[in-house]
Structure formats: structure tokens, C-alpha cells
Image 1 (cartoon, rainbow, N blue to C red):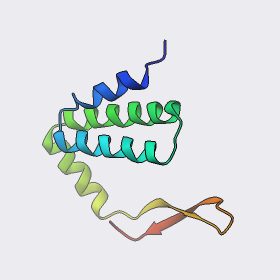
Image 2 (spheres, rainbow, N blue to C red):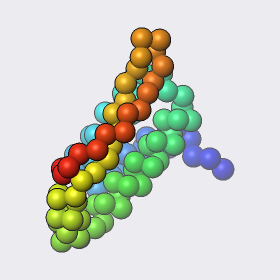
Image 3 (spheres, rainbow, N blue to C red):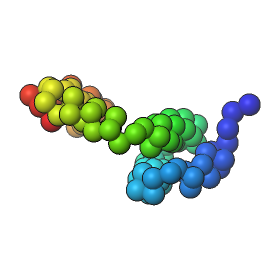
Image 4 (spheres, rainbow, N blue to C red):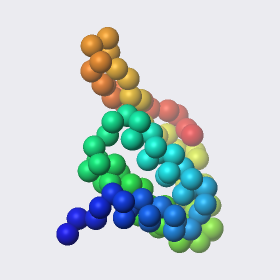
Amino acid sequence: MPTKLSTTIKKIEIVPNPDNARLIFEFHKFMKSNGSSERHQNNNLQTIISCANYLTSWEHSQQTRLFEILIDKPFWFCRSSSDHHGVKNCEIVHTESY
């Protein structure tokens, strides 16, 4: 049985890192203000909460090691934009390092 949005929102309160919990609440507020459907909100929040809980459970040394690996590597990200018709585009951007 699918989890209700209200249940997922309650799970934000038990995210171990208070800064992450605050950011997740802000992201939920952003999605609501943009008119995202409840299903879309729920799916995004469930994914983000799972990631936040997983990352919090990592030992500090593992987090530091991951950062050391990523800091010198080139990476890709998606820059979102809209054209004059309101059509959203995703531009793939490459950088030399973080």
C-alpha cells in the first residue's frame, strides 16, 4: 500500500541531521509552491529522506574519503532553463573540477 504524503512529511522530523531535515522541509515548501502533484512530492520526499538517513549513517571517515575522491574529478550536472515558450530544457554542463 502506498505511503500517504502526510506520513512521509512526518518522517522528515526524524531525519537524524537537523540541517538536512530543515532543507527537506524547505524543498517540500518549494514543491508545493510550484504546484507539484502530491504523488510527485511524495516520491521526491521519500527518496531524499532515504538518502539523508543513509548519508547520516556513514562514518565521518567514509564521507571525508568520498569528498577527497570527488574534489579533484571533473563532473557533470544539469542546468535547467526555460525558453520563451515556457518549455523547460536541461543543459548538460561539464566542469574541470569541483
